Length: 144
Image (cartoon, rainbow, N blue to C red):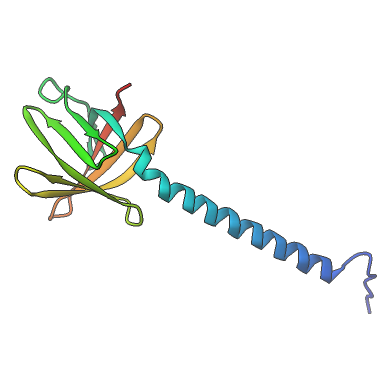
């Protein structure tokens, strides 16, 4: 029969330490989620220069026709978008929970839904999915 002394294993201390680790981990997770969800509205503001697209894992850089494409998102929930020779403007909505950006054209009334994929400082990736499930990622760089 093996007898463990109280100096080797103190179950009360172990339970307390485990509890503290769990509480601190949970708090860290919740503050991290709260921080990232509220940042999208401020992260996407600005004038963005088109860098290219990614479709089926293939990245395509801008060509002569679309090198001047831009996307501008203003803090009053307005947007302006230039695609090749087409200019559109209207309003946008950001859904923090779903991480989506919805652009509504003021002329046509049509909406287009993008998924917010990445927004590092100065860098934005939004993804559009067609009805036949083809996903295209648009990459932008902040114009300073």
